[in-house]
Amino acid sequence: MRPGVNPTFIMEIIDGNQIAAAIAAELKAEVAALAGRKPCIALVRVGDDPASVSYVKKKEKTAEEIGVTSRIILPPVSITQDALFKLLDELNADSAVDGILVQSPLPKHIDEVAVFRRVAPEKDVDGFNTLNLGKVAQEDETGFVACTPAGIMELLIRSGVDLKGKHVVVLGRSLIVGKPVALLALQKKAGANATVTVCHSATANLPAITRQADVLIAAIGRPEFVTAEMVKPGAIVIDVGINRVPDASKKSGYRLTGDVNFAAVSPLCAKITPVPGGVGPMTVAMLMKNTVKAFRLAHAR
Amino acid sequence: MRPGVNPTFIMEIIDGNQIAAAIAAELKAEVAALAGRKPCIALVRVGDDPASVSYVKKKEKTAEEIGVTSRIILPPVSITQDALFKLLDELNADSAVDGILVQSPLPKHIDEVAVFRRVAPEKDVDGFNTLNLGKVAQEDETGFVACTPAGIMELLIRSGVDLKGKHVVVLGRSLIVGKPVALLALQKKAGANATVTVCHSATANLPAITRQADVLIAAIGRPEFVTAEMVKPGAIVIDVGINRVPDASKKSGYRLTGDVNFAAVSPLCAKITPVPGGVGPMTVAMLMKNTVKAFRLAHAR
Image 1 (cartoon, one colour):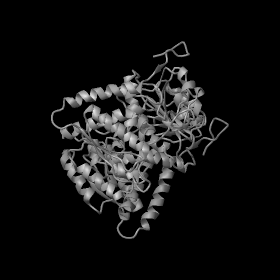
Image 2 (spheres, chains in turn cyan, green):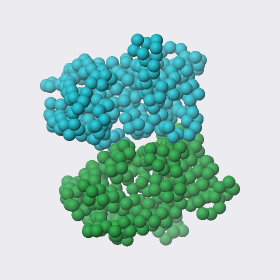
Image 3 (cartoon, one colour):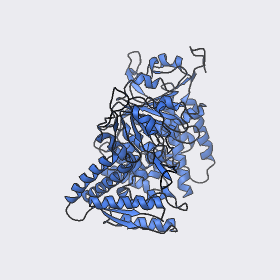
Image 4 (cartoon, one colour):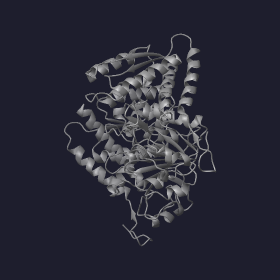
């Protein structure tokens, strides 16, 4: 914690790295206690997209730390959709594999949604299968929640935020963040039970709506879009954006920024997630949590 | 149309009977033009609950008017869940059946959600299968939308209401109305594109939120819950409630009322649906629309 500008509350930075590390430690203890073979995740990366290479490496490394076995599968960028389906069918049928992740983005000749649907729902640790999305709406806990929205909920819970009766405003209606996190915040279970508003590019008078948010979740992929005028003093702000903006002062030529103008908004907030180090690290932690869950569900059948 | 109290607009009653009749007439023409066998819906009613008897009768009658074949299946109230599953499996496998509706409520010894999941997704004209719910979130038009939320959207479109940029406030987060209608209003397609807020029993300061609604959809099952103070002048109000309240002046001993206090709220509105005769008739019309769609999809495969 560090003091904020507004004297009525202390602004707190929500440390995603620390919370993700705590989850990893819990999972490591859980996996260590398992008799027999360990949970196994298949990581499928098509081609050599540099961002995908780095994401899959991070997932492999985290799996290893926790004691989850990972099986890395690297089909060439030229793989046909049918061949990729065949590969997934084999993984679906393989009882030694608990979870399957197909790293996005896929080459343009492959229908990404069709691929996500091909992954068996009970191994869909990424939570992108249509059936698992339906289960989020149904509040059916046997399903898998997509890692980013699941990570947002976990960040809030572990930061002591109870959403009950609070007004959550979600900026963005994407299938992988906006819609599922809205459905999660609406659920009747403990920690959720929020009133939820979803805004997007067609929303009229956006600042008047976002200023009502007790908890504002920004997931639109527009660098520093959320300004101080859009935030109510004392709000909790969750920044899901990971945008690369050119920056000549950096060796890489760019810097990472979120969807929130952190410098302007953070002094107003009760709590805020930074970018990087906020929601990002949670995604991999939740992927591992889903993999251990898939293992347990498979062994309970 | 009839004049409202507020001089700046004319209040219009949205006539659900008329709109449902227009849809039925369109479907009748569409079905008449089909060569070969007609679309067929299996209507499964377990036991003799009086409301279910009357609902299934209405569905059968509407099917007949349109030219859709209906197959009425009346298992006894004592049927086991396994026997009901077996019956559904047979209907799922029967190529002469396009749509299957299992009338709710089911007896307490049967898991309703499990039954809805047993209906094959491609015959799930009620739209309650988990996969079809996921497809609503995915904006995948190959799925089936549950009849009440689909009917609400159709009522709005056929009443000349374009939701784009409007603030839709949904009162109620049920799986059969609140959540799917929220997802539909959020979709990127023409007629939708609304900013959507979902409120419920845990919402704080409810009137301040409902008063922001350009379109207020009440679906909580509490008679005359929505009062004039909760509605912005000029709003469009969709009343999904069908509540029986005791009324000694009626032969039946009760009268039907919606979730909205119609007498108090209607003078404020630009448009409002009555109860009965608003959303109710749309449900059966959309069931038939889904059945014809299931027939077409089956024949396109």
